[in-house]
Image 1 (tube, rainbow, N blue to C red):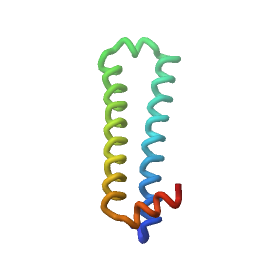
Image 2 (cartoon, rainbow, N blue to C red):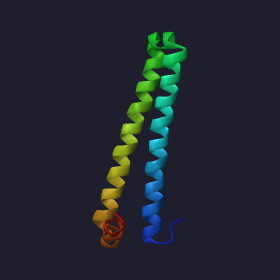
Image 3 (spheres, helix red, strand yellow):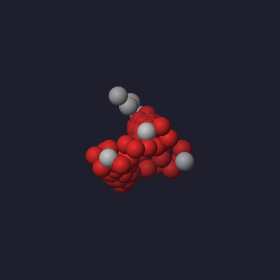
Length: 86
């Protein structure tokens, strides 16, 4: 559990980094499939799964941005911590 506002900011940054990793992993899987098993990309169910993962990533990013904006709007000290740390 985060003990300070700086810790809270670090946790949010870790969440964003985890999402970035998921995006990169999804791209790696897609690239692998494209290079080695490109015929799978003719299967609409496979294509839909990649689309669904991308849509979920986009929604999670929107929600993380919303959470960060609500926290900075509601906790003045948190806004100052975020601005001070860049």
